[in-house]
Length: 144
Image (tube, rainbow, N blue to C red; front, side, top):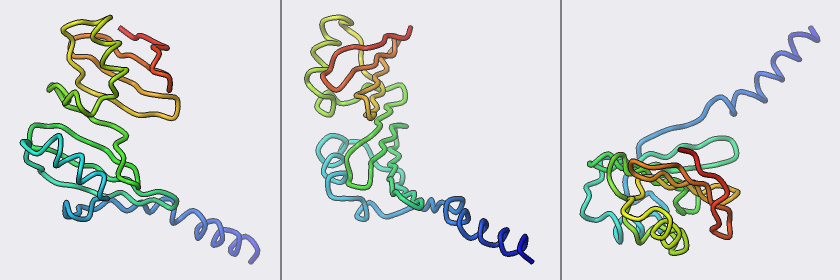
């Protein structure tokens, strides 16, 4: 009997963790900062769909654009990852300090993906290396 109760208790505790909820949502359901970023910098690119993923402790959003660009947002609507596929990401969404470093060290290279991490940023250049920046916008790693 004890084993049965223990098994049920473990199942009830872990069930919500395993039951992540990923569903399509209307663009109006995105947090306001996410909507503003899309209108300001990606308005010429039609949205294919938006989705919300809800886990036990977090909610994230992902937007898929017609040209293959995907943008991930945290629960507050701040972007965490922008992947242009093979296309260049609009310069205005990339921190100025990162743009300056790339312009100096990697001229004529477009940014096709940027991810905001706890440590800083990860940037992928078109036909070039992947760069990691710390929070002070200094390159900490270059991966060819």
